[in-house]
Length: 79
Length: 210
Picture 1 (cartoon, rainbow over the protein chains, first blue to last red):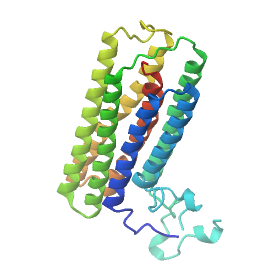
Picture 2 (picture 1 turned 90 degrees about the vertical axis):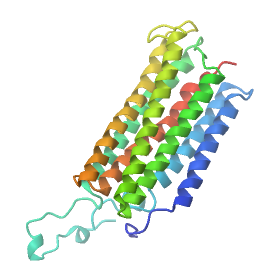
Picture 3 (picture 1 turned 60 degrees about the horizontal axis):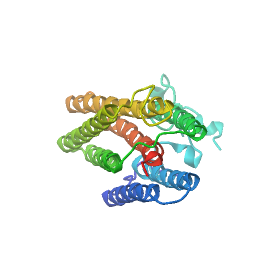
């Protein structure tokens, strides 16, 4: 698979990811004020943070389309 | 699988003196990725250490009021927005629109500086309430060390990123750097953003006053 020449992603995608990341940050604040035990709060925070980070790595850092890091398709080496 | 055939150097005369690149991405970008990985491990270690300390300390302080939470959300908003403006800058650079690329990357730098100012304001507020590196009026003395080292290291990254993006953008204007250099510093900037996504819930939101 060679996708280096593709435009990595559209501005609409970036905007959508941006909004989702901010909404997740808002959700974390709501969870922080929930009346549940600290362990459950922690697990929810962690899951949401991982989703946020995953979105940032995938879309902002172009992990999927571009040549940023080819370990994902098991081709780190030059061809 | 990468077989030897994939790595064979082409035998055209002008290629003879050149080695084939070892990786399919430029060495600069590879180095940035390796730096990001090692930096992720550094922040991971700090956050883990903080997690163990917090969990093992019964009187862990929970000093953050709604004001701090709102401030942290505004900071998140600014940092994520600056990631978006960096993406716009890189798109413009790819399209060959140099002045647009420069404008957007300077907007990114401004975002970074606003973030840093808000962060310092937050620090000064807490210091005014009596928080010190090794003491505080609320509970365990470990809180200050954990708080200042995690947020301080992140703040250092933000300020460093602002300086680096400014330097690269000015170099890009003069032709010393190209759009790939901007893109590489964009990777760094998104990473700084990503670390903040872990710092806010664990350092701020788990320690709010109830």
